[in-house]
Length: 393
Image 1: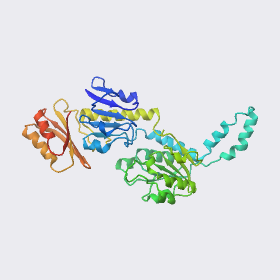
Image 2 (image 1 turned 135 degrees about the vertical axis):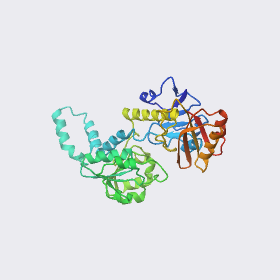
Image 3 (image 1 turned 90 degrees about the vertical axis):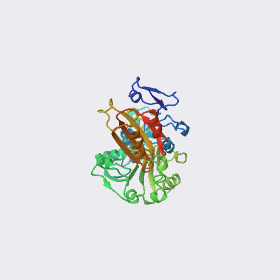
């Protein structure tokens, strides 16, 4: 019986993916095999000897102690793309709110409660509507920084609305490149992108290389009056540089999913309460993807969408009933696989199939065996220097 501890309110559609006869799923569990969470900040003390995986029902994992997990051989999953459509739609909303006088117009109309005659109200609206005139987004240029699952969808949406789209992503994967519409103009220099865009939309994770990426130098390169949209992470934009750019009118509008105290009450800032992925559909999609990834890992050892382990899939359908599978994580150092296979050979255990991959300082192995290894064999493998975790599946 696999034990899954949950934090936050996880969508029932996701929880239903765990069969009741194989899984115990509860927020009250201790000593779990896996943890499923959303925004809960996980204490490093939760990384114990039994824990095998942590799944974040969302894209960012800044609330998970990833380095501690890696040290203990705990695989950390996220769900890239599951909430992409929800964020994409909110980016569109942000661009429209930043282009048209929608918010002040609604505010003005809603205050006319003392006007009871329809004709009078209509005349007031006609007289005052010019105060809220704006601009269309068709024909404008959108610069997308980060062309992953969300960024590529934002780019495609903007193209369909008649915008010119250019993108920047030095770490663009082959998979992401295939998703990207051919009309997107790739820009190699970030300063050039922000300097030629009317709208700039951020879609990056928080890394050492992206923290405070949008700083004073970057604001200086922007077109006067441009609109910056941040539905990625607050830490990507340097706070003082942002405030200076707004106060000097270098930046025309800042639209963000991450409110900051120093920006409250400004007419050139629209703040939202971190609702980018807060739709029923997105929460369900994230929960289902996270649950499916956990199940495949706990039952078969396969890894997909991990942020700290290599992606690895070893087909098991034909051999599941005939063999025993072991999963081994170890430090990515030479001669590890040879030592592991030597232990199995000494125990006269035949290897039917295997797969080995590494990522940075960690390596991961799936090995299908013709017979179940003894406790002595498993202990011998676990005692090899630099082996982190051994699991029988």
